[in-house]
Image 1 (cartoon, helix red, strand yellow):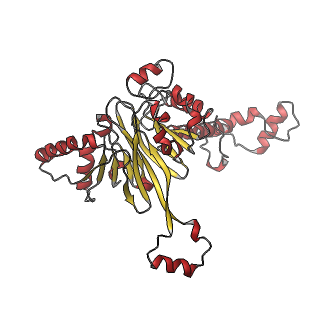
Image 2 (cartoon, rainbow, N blue to C red):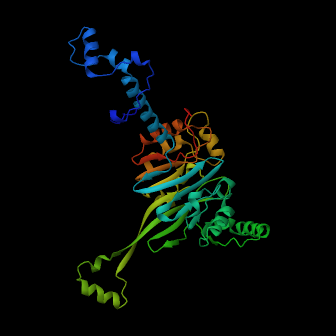
Image 3 (cartoon, rainbow, N blue to C red):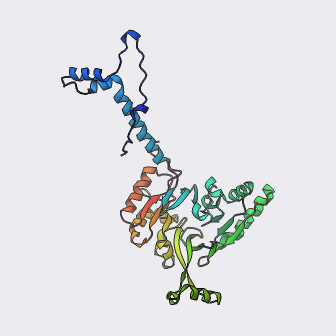
Length: 359
């Protein structure tokens, strides 16, 4: 339910009143007082009857209704989510398109149809080769070239790298364009450096075709315990002498699953994804109409499975994505609320591309 903001009467859109000049009545507090007195009161204030006649109440009601409608529309049209001071944007509609963008990290995950938000991200990580996750890749590369941006780095599972190279060769022949990119094959267990304070590692997921998720880690150096007692000049001398005085600390910040069954949750080697500050995971089906068995048959996760496995999540926030297009905004928010009741993490949903049942 919406709480109306205070409304200043000086800005109310009073209704226009057209009367013959001889019958025009001037609205005044005195007139309010007479009507109040006529209604059997003491005449010290305006009556409802007087305010209705003046159009004052209808104007106030109209302003309140407009403000409530404006707030409702803003909620429906809200783009992206911000959790743990990280903005996450994009669109993820099951079977149609998925592209999730984290601008502060300069990365995008998957590229179903190349939304504008993704074009300016220098690093793109592909989870698997279904078209609703990779179909926009040539357009992404071409659009960056059109804008004069540097060739992007596109990271893919090793098993599809050769096919992606063939795909670009065909597009280069057809378009007579160079379509420059740095194509990187990255396997589970390997590490790729985005910048000196961010690295990425893939983790195993379970879809109907080969797939993998990604964890983005922040990198910081911490002085080794045996040197904590030393003074500044002593530490400096050790460093100049070639002694390694720091340990490199990796902290999982954002994990993205792409399409997967819930089995990824119970994979022991995926612990970093489950303790990353933010977990972006799929929840294709949300209710009893589509069963857990149906979700698993198609390589997807059902909300009921996330609820059942909620005790394993150590994340600060969980962002749900990849809902079936059968659902409305209200269905998605209800689903997020159900998981929220079982999870310690804050649960939100990426809802761009979905409509309200009231629109």
